[in-house]
Length: 72
Image (cartoon, rainbow, N blue to C red):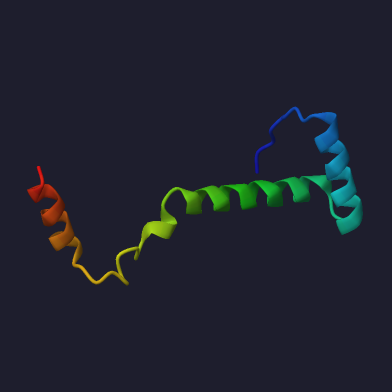
């Protein structure tokens, strides 16, 4: 495990302190969980949700592509 140094605004540090107190967990654990959630959210946003997009379509994907290209 590596260490990093970050600068946070006072308001975020105060909110973080509230979470730490409520959850009775170390601040580092709360920050690690927050970063893990952020990364997971962005992985999904990068394209994981596009797989299977055409599965409920009535037209074949290749047929649709050829129809679009015929307009050129």
